Amino acid sequence: MPEEFARYPSLAGRGVLVTGGASGIGASIVAHFAAQGARTAFLDIDEANGRQVAAETGACFLPCDLRDIAALRAAVAEAARQVGPITVLVNNAARDDRHGWETVEPDYWDERLQTNLRHAFFCSQAVAPMMREARQGSIVFFGSVSWMMGQGGMPAYTAAKAASHGLARGLARDLGPFGIRCNILVPGWIFTERQERLWATPEAVARHLERQCLKEKLRAPDIARMVLWLAADDSRMVTGQSFVVDGGAT
Image (cartoon, rainbow, N blue to C red; front, side):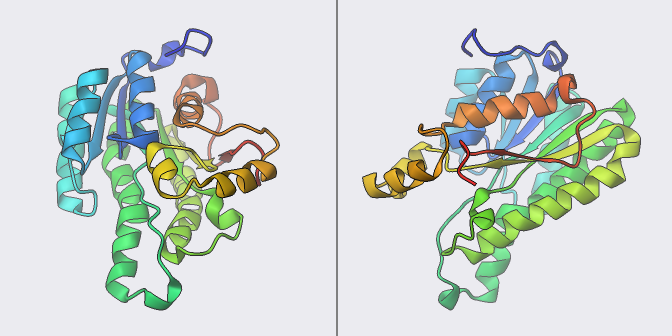
């Protein structure tokens, strides 16, 4: 982690769990927590990339299909066994596959919500008892500017991401008496390898940067550094809030 960015003493030794940590934004989040000295574990269905991130960062990788709630619960328990009680959870896992409204069938709709929303609740449910016992905790949910900007072409994804705001705000109220904070981080267009490969044509990038106040591509570390602040004690009285990191596009 570059020396010009902040270090958070409160994160050293803290048990952290990140979902979807094998690539993209998630991998950067894992690396940033590990660099802070946090005892970091992450879950992902991608075993090859997961093992690589674990080797590079020293974090604990547990393969898991988050759509399988029994497997999710078992993986959270194993993460706690390996890194200690989880007091930071980052519900990062998601997949923004495009799909036309005309072709969506009920099975696909349900699978998209399993991939982009349902696991965030069940991961939170699984770690909350550990946080309650510690009398502290930070759960970071991920939203998306896509629904805020009225983006089409992926209705199940935008519905799931809009719903994450309601989930986070409701849990902030329910868990607050135990010292557990819940916030929503809303990334703009983050130029991960996947985004660059699939959708970042020169024309699309130019149009998007025209919308941004800051004329620079956002990268995964820009999101990871905001996650660190939301996890650290520096934000100890911040809960039920949304933080947009999009260069001023919305």
